[in-house]
Image 1 (cartoon, one colour):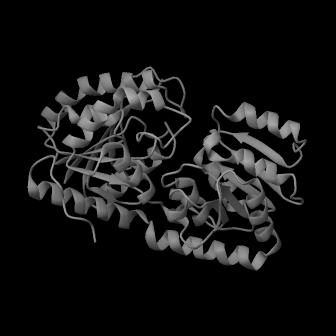
Image 2 (image 1 turned 120 degrees about the vertical axis):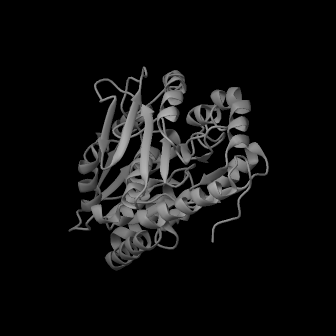
Image 3 (image 1 turned 90 degrees about the vertical axis):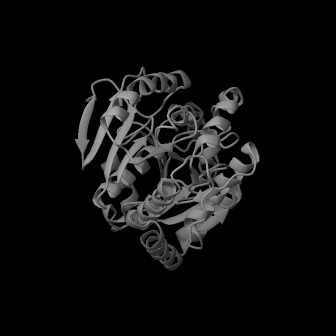
Length: 379
């Protein structure tokens, strides 16, 4: 099968959905398919290159940062990709287009739905109400385009039930397939653990890191390491200074993936008390690295961890503190949760399993031979 894949972000650009796209593309190649990716150009990155068998095309953009992208920068990708695709479609006989994000990427794919059927995978920030920190006005402004993208798609997929429910709430009754994100579990090796609590995240208010910092005021003997960057960083810096916690709460900023893996593998406990989350890759990475997990109960986080973590309420620093102290004082529980979490990732979220589900969807789309239909559910 020859697969076209669109995502405005592809490593080294972007956050959680970018490595998901990369790993899926590479696994599809491993399964014997051809995959071409059209993504956003950035500074000196090559316009074309092949990485692990995946052909990558980078179109012009005005993006300024690796880790973050503004609305007008996304628009520059849409304009460039719309101009680039006709030539690419003329040169290649693609079977299907797998598009990541309703907005902005889906707008590009929707313009060519009569030439090539596409499926849409949502990731969170493209769904209204998911991210209160960003894009609220843009979602309101572009809702007619979002509806068009979803109406023309051959299939819609979501990594979590949590996000699926937000899609239905915003766009009405639709058939949405649940396909979880995957992880290359073999890249993570649980090692000797340090007295370290870890969070890896973009720094937004909804991530709940401020409540972990509050909780750290009552926890001794452990360091709290925060990896990531974002607009909430100045507030967190002021909070750490105000609470006089600089000796045990560290903001490390943006780290490369190999550096992050070392952070995961050395941490005893990983905490992500987000108030809005789809299917966070960072939780799966922490599980694969043998961390015990503390995370929020009423989001997609709970779908990732199942029964292998301690769940806390949103915006509850006292509850977070109690959960952390429970784990820090009970090493047997810590080891048991970590072992079961690793086993869950290996069993449920390996990329061969996840990519196989997508191939099954592609095949059913092609069997019907038309866009915009409802396909039967996965089993």
